[in-house]
Amino acid sequence: MPTRALAVLLLLAVPCVQMGCYVRQVQHVPAASVSQPEKEKIVGITTVKGEAISFNPPGASINDKILHASVNKMPYEIPLDQVERYWVERKELSKGRTAGIIVAVAVVGVIAGVAATHHSNPSPPKSSCPFIYSWNGSEYVLDAETYAGAITRGLERDDYSELEHLTADKGFYRLMITNEAEETEFTNLMALQVVDHPAQTQVVADESGNYHIVAAPQPPISARDNFGHDLLRWLEAPDRLIWEPEAARDASHGVRHEITMTFPKPKGATTAKLVANAATGTWGAFMIPESLALHGRDLEAWYQQIDNNQKEREALLAWSLREELYELKVYVQEPTGWQLGGIIPGGGPVVAQNRAVLLDVSRVPGDELHVQIRPPAGFWALNYFAVDYSAESLPRVETLRPVKALDESGKSVLAELSDVDDSYYTMPVQGNRAYVTFPAPALRPGMRRTVFLHSRGYYRLHLTPQGEPNTAVLREIGGVPDAAARLAALRYSQWQNGQ
View 1: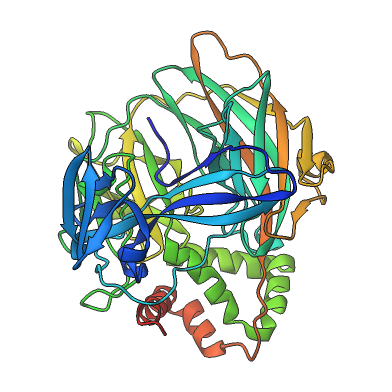
View 2 (view 1 turned 180 degrees about the vertical axis):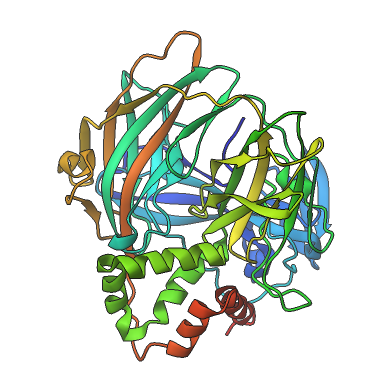
């Protein structure tokens, strides 16, 4: 079963030592952010009806607001106002000292309800946090974004990412970690955790790094939001249909969606493993630097508070959970009403990960389980939910430390990545990277293997905010529920209008 809602594929090409080579990117971008689609190379689309359609080469043409293409060698056309996302192929020159690579990027997502009108505004910035690429025996494939949201040392955290594409090659596993944003990244640890498990099962990590065997995941039998929209086709399978509403207020000026999912529940079941494939929304990632800029010239002082004051750090984490911008509460319906059942952690917006949430369903009557989430608009991209009622069993986990780690200049950074300590592998410049090698133990007979990266670190965005802090907005965000989401909706409206 594929576990990626959003994926980026790196195709290793010929070495380009000390020379440039072209990077080819196929990005799935909202129609509203493509101002001149007729000038783009469009290789596919997602429609407003939730259809994912790939075009035969050379792609689509546009004439009089109609898109024309070939699908399975048959003519195809669709009005532009029925296009949710364009799959746009772009090329740019990439320079690298060690090797050049041709990159094919498929950032998949569907923004439900975004009007297919076109504006001259640019796309939001790229996401932050290190990218992890797995060697699959012939090419590097983007497999994870690690410790997303850890924007200063006080928020340094552990991350557990499944490496779906990692393959043993001549007795070793190989990873590449890269800095692809305007930030400095500090990685404290990279270790692999290998889980061999029965072939017909899958293993899913929870936010604390515990691993759960999932034997019989069941998708929802219904999924609706508080406006009555049927979301089942968006949430029932791990595919290219991602429910990611735009960051806008609804007709009643609200900025949250309430999504209620119904699952079958066996008689006598007392616990359930909820499997959620979700990621931070594109606009949610954009709002991180926007929010930091509100501190103005006091930003560095704010960082120091979070880094050095435990009470300030705990207050920030409590606020984050209250607002659900980057972690999402899961509620279970019981006879007494909706009860908090667990938390879905956030992650980077490019590569979504499956996460397991253990739910107590012992007080749920009948043969149905009702689960509700309340994501703020624009902050979440949701792909897939399922529940598994199989008995909990602890898989055997083998931890692998790296045996070799070289940065792009050939310098060893093995000591910095081997243990959790005060020594960090630092990537201060966009384009920094390191190649990390691990031993690959033999697979246990009759078993299937899943490999996770346990990483730890933090990053600092390259921001130079100036002027006085916006204390009024900061006070409102801190004290008024959903004020941060309302600010995001305002910024989104301004962005749409080119302001």
